[in-house]
Length: 303
Image (tube, rainbow, N blue to C red; front, side):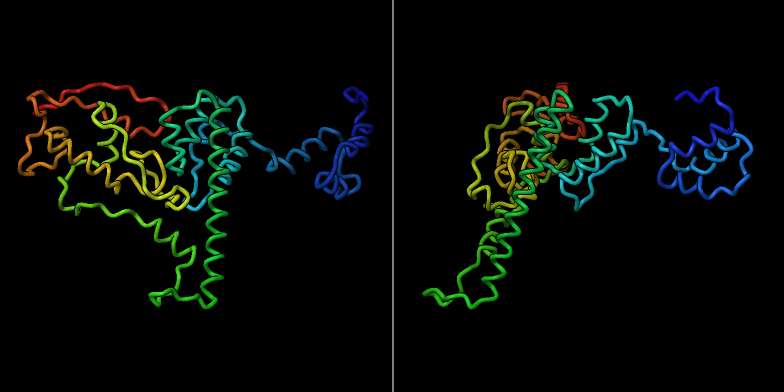
C-alpha cells in the first residue's frame, strides 16, 4: 500500500496498523479530536518515543569493557560479544586488542602473547577452549569440595598412627600449596625488577633452557596461579623456585648485573665472565599488554 500521497485522514487511520506494544497503547490513549493532521501525529510520536532510540556505539566503547575480578571467562566473553554486536563498522584489530587488554586469565593471556591469533575467529576459538577448561576445572573443584565436606561430617577411620585419614579436599589443598624453595629467600641476590621481567630478557637472549618438570600432577595444582617460566599452572612466576635458581646462577656467572640491586656486594653490573658487556632485550616483551610479538632491540647496558 502506498500512502505517501494519501490524504491526512487516511494516513492517520492506517497509522495504528503498524504499531504494537507500548506504541499502540500510546495511540489509543490520545484524546478524540486532539490530532488535526498527520504531521502533528508524527511529531507527537517522535517526542513520545525519542528516549527509546538506540544509539550505536563506537569501537572505543569496547576498550572500557573489563573482566571483573570474580567473573568467569565464559561470562566475560558473553558480555563482551553482546557489546560488540552493537558496534557498526568495527575494526577487527581493535576488537581483538580490546578483548585481550582487560583479560584476567593469565594462562590464556600469556598463550595469546606467545602466539598471537591471526584473526578474531581464531582468538574467540582459543578463548572458548580456555573457558571450557576453566568451567570443567571449577566443576571438579566443587565436586571435590562437596566430597570432602561429606567425609568430614562422618567419622573418618583412623590409620595405624592414630590419625584420621585426610579427605580428598584436604589432600588437594595441601598439594596446591606453593612449593617451598630449597634455599631461603635471603640466599638470593636482591633484584631491581620482578622475576617475570628478568625471565623475558634471559629467554630473549637464549640464556636459559627448559625448566624442570613440575612434580605435582596438573589436576592437583593451583589452577589460579600461572608460571611463565614453566608455562603451566601450579604457582606464580615470582615464586617459582626453579626460576630463582636460574637467575641466581646467571648472576653468579656475572650475567644480569643490570638487575642486581645497587650496593649489593660481590657484583660487577654490566659485565659477563669474559669481560664482555651484557646485551639485554628491551623489556617491552615483559610489559606489553597486547598480543603483538615484541620487537627485539638489543641494547648494550653500561658497566
